[in-house]
Amino acid sequence: MARSKPSKQLSQVEIERFLVAAEAMHRSIIQPLLSPTSEHYRALQNTHEARYP
Picture 1 (cartoon, one colour):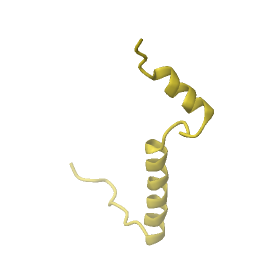
Picture 2: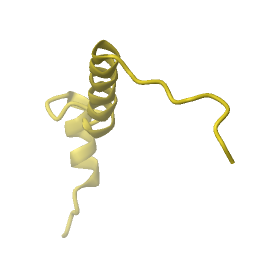
Picture 3: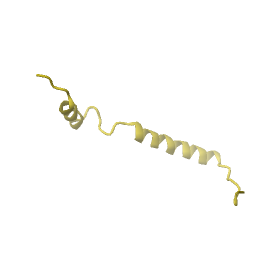
Picture 4: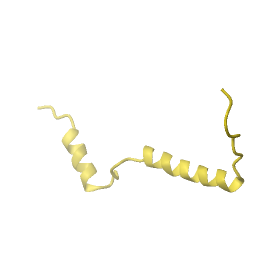
């Protein structure tokens, strides 16, 4: 099936904007949801530790 509209060539500015947005999205996915230095993070670590008698 043929395309009804030809594909658009992105300008350098559009490419740069896309790359900035892609990097921001990537960082939001890979960064921890809780800061390792936060009180909440430490409380969760303590809660999930294996405890043996």
